[in-house]
Length: 255
Image (cartoon, rainbow, N blue to C red; front, side):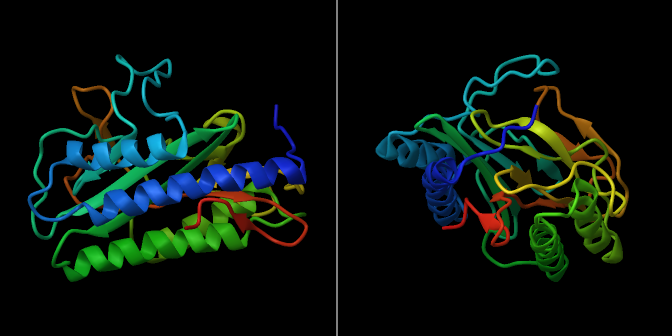
């Protein structure tokens, strides 16, 4: 079931979204050569703690997961697409990093992700990150009252495919509300004019993912969480929680 939020609820979700944005910004600032992934998680934890927010990631265990997720931040490096578990890996100059974070505040969830290069960026990685950001912006622009889920999916997929990149099979966005993952699903590729009608008060996480090698295949590490590109190429991921409103899309997780 899709919950239609009141305007007051959207304001509360915006407060949660600001916490997510601050946590991601702080973790990104701490992502310098030599920093460990677990140290980035500690930075994000502190932001949540100071805001009085909880983490929807920590302890999260969907049916397919062998163990609960042990962190508040997903940290995926280079060929890792999503769901990377922060560990003792030390970042190196030129690493491509995707950070994904969520928050729960006053009963409402928020979810966002960002990709960037640590230190000096390779031109290919810059193009990858620019494309996933462009795909996110295209998806947000399509998130208007009267459009359908397929319009968002088509907008995202068109940007990714035009750049020659792969789109990981089976991954995409989702509804957000009282919980981090709610209906409806928001695919990263689809046909315009299809799917659920977008209404004022719906809230969606739009999250494109791209694979640099051009294939859509992926595999999961032995940890049961970290998703990597099948061809070993680098990947990028971006995400915002977006409210559908009569005045146009409202990004709730913007800083």
